[in-house]
Image (cartoon, rainbow, N blue to C red; front, side, top):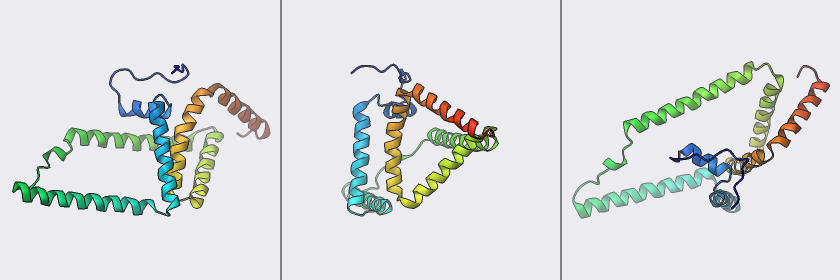
Length: 188
């Protein structure tokens, strides 16, 4: 398979979750990316075809898990005369602190982004953000959560790869649109 030089470099050494997601989004692992799209499509089609809801399926899976753990625990007590050992299922304190730190960083970045867009001098960034949020609100009134998640997966799997491949053309087109907008309304 030929190597595409337009993609950002692959992380060398330890594979971090961030690098794995980037590899998936930029189609470096084509079979895994195709598998993700196929599973998302099959899930969406099946749930739409049989008129199931995500909350309903999640609750059924949770009931199944609770039932299996209950049966397993009772069989284990019956056969081994003792409670099952759950010490291997605990999360270490360092891992919990790392997850809390990561969540706090996401929240901080979201707040920074919110203020950056709100205080930005360029009206186009503010206008584009408000328009995108308005479009998202309008789309949400016409689709259910599963369809929105499916559209997010499909767009998230295709748009980054297309952008990286055609970045120069997209930037030229955006600059032309921006200049045309400036000539139409100088306040932008």
